[in-house]
Length: 315
Ligand code: C5P
Image (tube, rainbow, N blue to C red; front, side):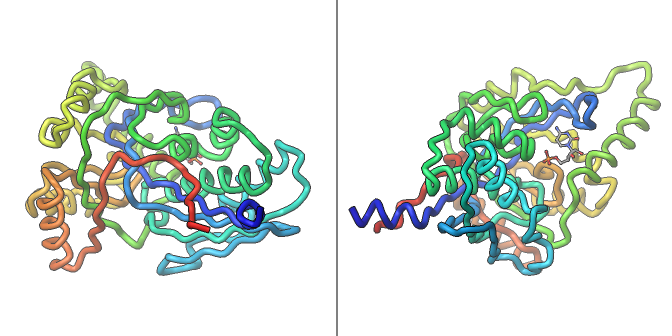
């Protein structure tokens, strides 16, 4: 059939960005990764990846203000994802990947991980390599700690490096305002700054242990209510200590978001995007408008949404 034929030549996949509603940071393992206890929520800012049949591997990117911030070679996680899938399945052709970005670059929302997840799903479909979810998850975890969640979506607890996922029982739809910052932060640098901040705190609080990094039971109770007002006081990100150290102005940005009417705000992942939780969509639109009138870039999103999905382009 011509329909099936055209689908083989071009596959469009959409994958979501994420917010860490809770992020607890634990000890470092032998590879320099921190043990994490995190709750992810996939939100309605998406990366679109369109994979087209080709003999070799190539990439184009659109949707970014400064194209030089996104590499087009093997440093690009989507390119690596395609090559990892080809190697794992013995596929000997290539692919052209067109990436349309909407998730802030180096913003702490997992945009690069969403690209990798979308590229895995798109190439698996395009090449008819037929890997199931578990194998794609395994390949994704090799590419980056947040890639498995971009495949899964929804609301999920992540342990290990953040790549061991368990679906979380969550109700409702949460309305977010995201304050972006064009000047991104490097995730490894934020973790290093966190280690320094943590070592200082350990000296200061030597007699009384700091908060454990596990997700507290009260967090899951709040998620079950489906009520933003119950969840707001539970939002927490220990990695903020690293982001604040590198970018002290972020603390004031959160305060301004709350002053504009948000229930609470946190640094998203390693930052510098600030995620503001609002009572409902009307309140969130108002908060975003107020922040825009002060010259900030404020995006609207809701969560949870699904993980990487093939988009039916109606052909
Ligand atoms: O896995 P990903 O490439 O996203 O991680 C980027 C960097 O962030 C790692 O090289 C590491 O320095 C830091 N990281 C960490 N612990 C984690 C996840 C990431 O220290 N659980």
